[in-house]
Length: 290
Image 1 (cartoon, rainbow, N blue to C red):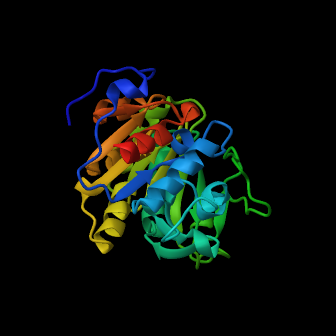
Image 2 (image 1 turned 90 degrees about the vertical axis):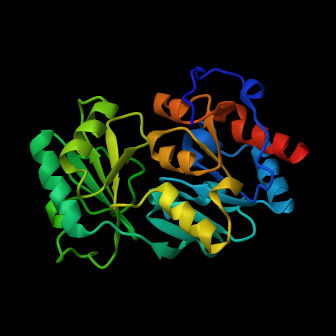
């Protein structure tokens, strides 16, 4: 795709493009994209999603969030009821309370190799382990949405075969650094440990998210689309952060939010308004009107 030069505050109407001739699926990120900054879904967005489903267009929420954080949108998914969580590591059924339909785990030996390598390459890195049944932290890891009763222990223990919840697949390994710039940390981690997992980020802090090799929003979305006989050309995708990049480049039509990361703005050809201005809803409304 041709790199774009528009800056984040470009109004949506100036960069709107027609939908593909046969639009069959809308794939949208949540935080910073579909959700407003207070983590709610606006009435306008709710109405746009419902209208798309009525028009026969499937909607997939594609997020880095775990299934247990999907309550904010579970009432707004129609039809199939599926969502892609944990950056592609899990497909869940929101009609069934987030029940996993497919899991693409990170192997524990790979996760342990990443922990060992990053501890040496970036002193001060702390880790969390996101399993299918919950998240577990190291003592130094800054808790975010800490789950009640979460186990706190060194990562090596949390990833050991004898760990109490070792039967739960590892969906993501999270790595946090208190001082490094987020993009610098991502580049460093990919260079020293990229052979063991797929690294990305979606937080404004130096917090990396690590999935199994080949696992991303794009690869899981492609699998879901293939099962439905939907091609990439029939998909419109929305996103704002580096963990959306592969999905945005895979989809036939992609939109960067006005508030998107510079890499996302450079990788997409279309723009819409910020998440606070219902940018996703604006595009859906134009698609349905056109």
